[in-house]
Length: 110
Image (tube, rainbow, N blue to C red; front, top):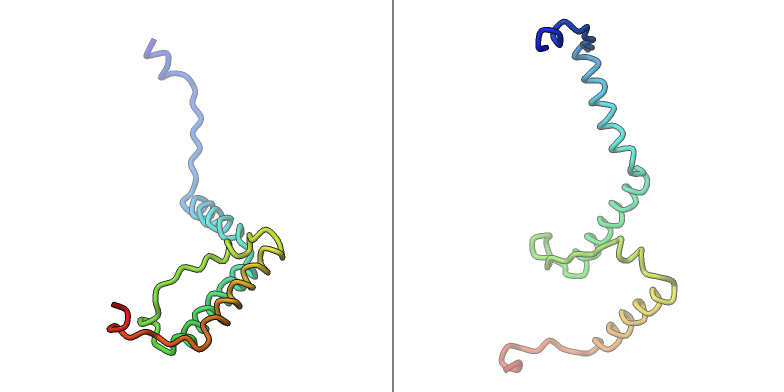
């Protein structure tokens, strides 16, 4: 029976290496097409703007800025303008209340 199996006609497809390379390059290309280049650039611009604003706010070098994680997707996913307005009201209220507040020295904290 084993002899019969080896005498069965077989079809082998042999491809050149170039075809395989082209196929793998096309697969990689499809992965990057998934993301809109303009959207990625817009996100990068926003991240750079945030970074620049933190430099201005803290008036320090990049290494000295506290590590913050700002999730742009989370901000985008705020349910509606009302929710965004509440967040903005909170920020404005916090900034208003902080006016005139002085930093406590280490001896006053105890």
